[in-house]
Image (cartoon, rainbow, N blue to C red; front, side, top):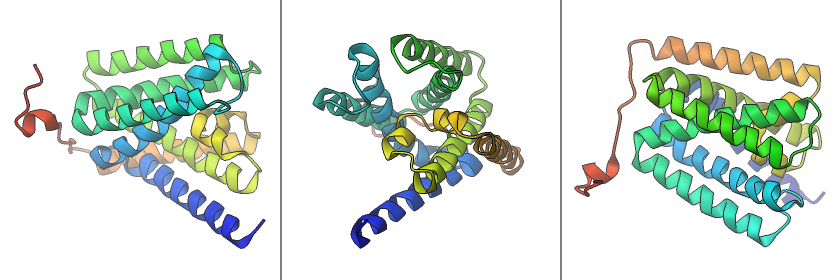
Length: 221
């Protein structure tokens, strides 16, 4: 490995680790800033996995998967930035999708159309429940703690376990669940500590809701 490639690898790992840490331990407080970034990453992985599930092949193995991944990445990032409720729905959907896919693959199922559909259905169920039950704060805290912990563990597996970086992007929660029992324990510990820290530091504090199109004078009707 050359010095330049090692530096790029280390820098990428540190940035992803930092994002995972902030997401897990302060995801709700910095919701408006973090969610467009996370929306881009999740959208990219989700779009590429959709093409993989529908047409087969490997993750990001075709130009179409890259194009669709970038489309979802930009769309999720933009809508997360513009609309608070959409951002809540996306982070809730991401958590449900990641859990659905991650658990099935941890049980030994290969990623394919069935696994993808289960992830999509569970993601929609979690997002719908978050909005319908008006428990956005608690869903955001739980989802950011879960996904942030997945990024933290996935980054360590990427840096020290030989995990391809694409696997971390595709589904960090699945990566953590499929690791050794020690990595699974680390994932659960980081997620639990992150959620507890967020509940403690945001007690009595609510994130500001936003509709940036309306705030800029654009009609959303």
